Image 1 (spheres, rainbow, N blue to C red):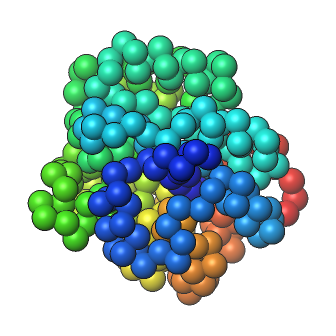
Image 2: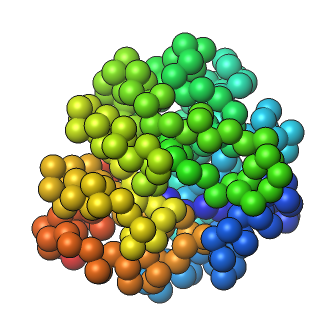
Length: 281
């Protein structure tokens, strides 16, 4: 549910160079920015599918994203393994709403990725309600970064990026006001894990993806919830290329989560959320 495409075919990167370099060091990534075609080949070899996206933080970073339309076209080219999500800059107001509609209607994106800290916005602010209303109307999920942020880590002042915008409690009012909008809280929400679990337990339109952290570092309460009361709304994700599926699964296999819950987390919950046909594997 969580794979980054961070470079356009013409070489334009999703982030300023300082952020790309610092995050690669923070995660000790083996390869920081593989191409979309390379990612498709690697996931096909693994007999896995991936939701792919970038983040439009044009206003906050003064840096335009890599091409979202190109990501959508590449996912269509590799439709057996890649599922495209879009991204819009929330600061762009009505234009963000219009662009979201174009990305769904003309380019076939299946959801949207937001990163409140990198995009520098409060997801609970009333100004963003028209955008959420449009996503709810179109029936596409919204995936929000939550918790600790590897982007900007290790830089003076964190490159000006503020962690507080990624507190999951800011999504509680969004989930309450837009009950048909499926909201995915990305990552273990450290240091706000209890808040994230509380929201997901209270609101059935809220999901949690397990990307961005090696499972050996998952907070114990997240492991318990994933294996028990929230097993129907927890989703497998890696944050690839920052974390590889092999590394993630190697540590996930050590967690005390039963076989039925594992099957839901690894495949069936995502298939249900995205409306994909499910096989027997």
